[in-house]
Length: 282
Image (cartoon, rainbow, N blue to C red):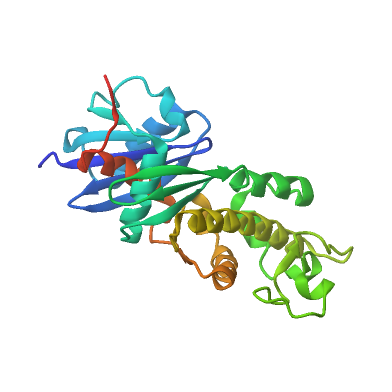
């Protein structure tokens, strides 16, 4: 078999994501949850080979990125291995999956990072500590719900009018550009009658509205209206409606591409195939 497959691995604080890359497409994306970065890499790699009926000798190269990549000091199973700057991987992966030439790419993980990316440049613009860690932490403290999927399920049917203070609650005037349903204060109107679903939806709304506004500010600074959303939080089903609301207010285009969770891993693999800078691990 031709040795042409590149493996991209994004090693995060709590999850490790892996994709294969060949013939200008990604294949076999999946993630494993583990707190030990080295164990998670080797576990993910083994499962990836098994799931895709591959052998070690089928792999041309492994490219790693993410906060946990600093722990990788040796080649993965003696395969040539490189380390890619995480912001470069975020930008390249976001553009590739969204089929865009230029965009603000937002990586929504434990925290959130925003990068500007085009075909020649990737630049970190900033970010926020608000992200998946916030979602889990607040849900744990306020709802005694600790599992990511359980938070999403708990929020089903939640009513934000029992939690958030809106513009229409504080003024009868018509404010140009701010319809009455616009949030004035997250959790600013929480009621004693608010259900667990209402509170869970309020937490999700707070996290995504904050991320959305950070992304809007970044897009305005660089005059780029295309915002590509990537990372673990891109799979939250309630996200789309929240970002659609921000899009209508600020005339930006939020894009959630297929396999958005794996954009950074894809970007790591692309760094090698596109001849971008990386550090060789010997």
